[in-house]
Length: 150
Image 1 (cartoon, rainbow, N blue to C red):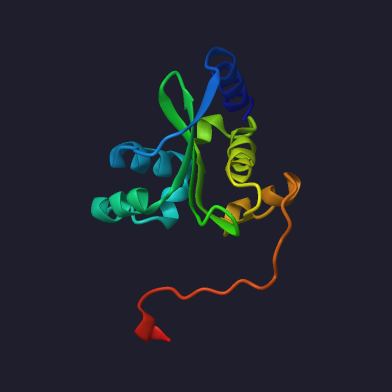
Image 2: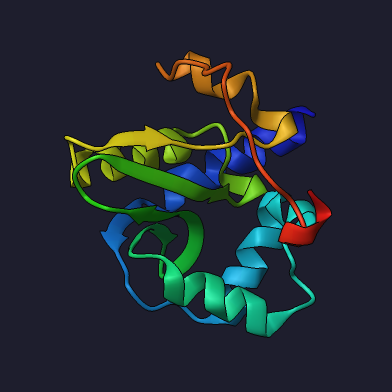
């Protein structure tokens, strides 16, 4: 475990992180990050057309890059004044625990400060969001699959 922590620290010291809004990402770069962050376990990574549609439908994408390499992404849909749904928060495993996810969330909120920031947590990340100041909402509902399934 110490070896992995030292590796992460070395990466952080050598590669400063740059943040920016990017409207167009490669579907291959997106897929690679989803897999490297473990978010790919819950995303349709085998369906490139679907991933492409996910990218094109988002209207706010903030990235974190280390020497040009995509290491973090906040992909959102927003009406810019009432709500912003942060549908993907992905940080490459080698870059986690360095504040990248928190910075991406802060920048997402700052982009449209009047809009409430909403997200569904990955099971492994449920404990993370309260630590960075987000509140849990007990009234969340969703439909999965086709509308006929109800």
